[in-house]
Length: 315
Image (cartoon, rainbow, N blue to C red; front, side):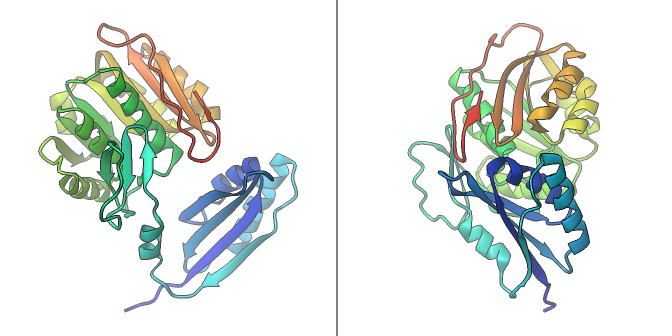
């Protein structure tokens, strides 16, 4: 079996700088994790793992450029090769159970998770994005939690850009309604279908690969009363007119994958289509928006419950 060389990058700093360095290093390290090392000193650690030879010059330039923008010194960091180990398995075993609102997201290594009455979602670390740990996924799950709490049951749900299917599964578990999931990546659709079977929601959840709102399943089943879309800011803006056409009057859209500083432009793109903001969730520099299309059947305000896994949350 061919061995793959792996390397590790690590640095420390305050929360603000570590979040900025994390974004700057995304092109260089496919796996990045930031965690709090010392709450009193506001000290955070950032670790990244990559394969083959690291782009040492690119990493140094990214750190230097980010430090200059922040007005802070370039952080001391280590860049070192790793011994050959099964890092995927170790990451799986280290994946902690996450209580998120009414949900309990856990990996298969937990044989008997303590759910405390929460709705369990079984998702392992895989090739498709979405294990529940990222603030954008948390925000979307909390939005689903809030809508369920307000007894808002959409007749049909669409998860646009489904990744691992975690949002589709969450919706299918709290509402007995059809849920459609779409992703441009066939691997994401494969993982979503696999996870739907493991979570016993495959009868109500359908996943298809294709070009967003052009997928035949979406054209056939629209309009939807709830659209979940956790992708990125600019694709969300570009897809705003198509989202509007696929969303029923009075329907809600939960949008995430955007930074707090990108809220205004994402909102502007959707307000131009007649959608209005009814709630937002901010955590660790990321934002989740809940928007409503004009029409009957939805509340004027949706409150999101507070959830603070790694620091303060702004609602």
